[in-house]
Image 1 (cartoon, one colour):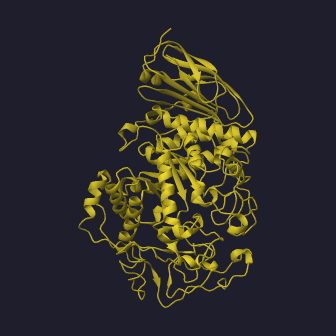
Image 2 (spheres, rainbow, N blue to C red):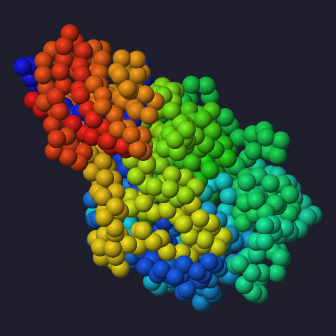
Image 3 (cartoon, one colour):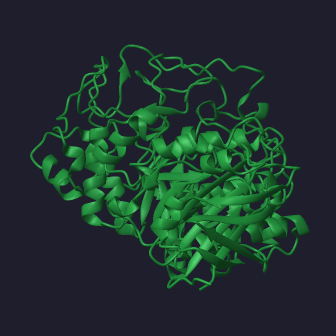
Length: 623
């Protein structure tokens, strides 16, 4: 029997991808040695143990989590799930309905606040944090600093949001560092546009509150002195999503105002554009380019904000709606950040595939959401009407930028997998989760509660079922069962929820330890579809490898049906792996102790496998 002179892994998973593409991530700039796993956690919701969940409930009625709820025990359990970076969502001080007047914070108007707890993307003061999250609001910045330090002590990196496209309608920078001028303070409000105005204006018109629709009333109709369909803003400003109406529509981002980056109302630019071939330049060269250029005032304001938080100890950012801000600004901002901290983690929300490469290469983003390509494809497959064949198409199309496309199956904007509106059962996403986490060298992200099957079923008030509300004070029931009154031991979880979390833990820990998942990729899906009996579009397979680790991945996306397959490993792959004819023992690693055999004859490999519904296997090729 032939034996290997190196350790190998074989991952067999119910339903994976395959294509004739061969990604060589070693050619990708700044590639890391191991995978990154981001845990997105909504800070306001994480530690809340209150189970009342009254629609439109107050913080006192429904509860609110605090920075202090992220104890060392809680953070250690998150890390042990297989997490390297934690994205604390909703940290910057945003508009909310609460009384913090004694701390020098003005009341926010319900007519321009979504929900009662407020949108985390309507930031009111970039140099401080949400007072709801502090045990002592007067000490809230120090309490967040302590959380940053605890997170680092446990061994994870810290990410927070920055939202350059828009800010709260009532922004008040009471905590600006010395020399920092507030947004709009020096604007010429008689002009619709000036390159150094921070906002766009509608001269001689007053802002008007939208006409409410579908029976909506701020605070669910509760009486409030400020809930009077009036909000003073003279002249009116453009709304965050770009609406130029003095009275935006109910579905516009009426709680925010758009930032002016030097784009004239006709779309032309009032700043220097990057020269040709600048997508090949590094961060230092981008930073040098901007040194002698005239920089719009808004650019400098957001650079100051980002560098303030880098100096504070934050390790990176998730940039909201990055595609609504010009790519040249991102070149300026991100190169400035990287000059301060070369290891800063820069993730952007971009949905237009035509902008992926410009925002990565010219905008110097580390990572973008892979939403409209991989996520949407996997969602269709999970729901039963998509074909796994399309995964190969996506991977082929992303071949040159695959490392930069962050993968996820949940985040705060998307439906919970277990919601009735999506799959209705968290287990249905297991094969998709394995594909998402292992198909490329990109980071993987999960959303808190995903690992225990949180369905997002609450009618929270402004936020409705299928997504855990980001606008309301609410409890997250499945997550609360794992939290177990602050013990963070899963003591109240059902057996099914325990098993699901264990699946995520095994999978994510494998991904961050695997060298091969930062190596090369080639699909074997279509080869097996043509040459393997019973193999069809509900199964997916591919291979990943490095010099020390060899992986074959196959997944079954069928909810009810098993597959018995003689999976084929093409001669082309085995030549690259330097595998000769012979028999090889495979040890299952993802969750079981079974062994398999791979037979190689005339250069073609085969492995007999039986894949149960939604099953995933990881097999190690023993020396």
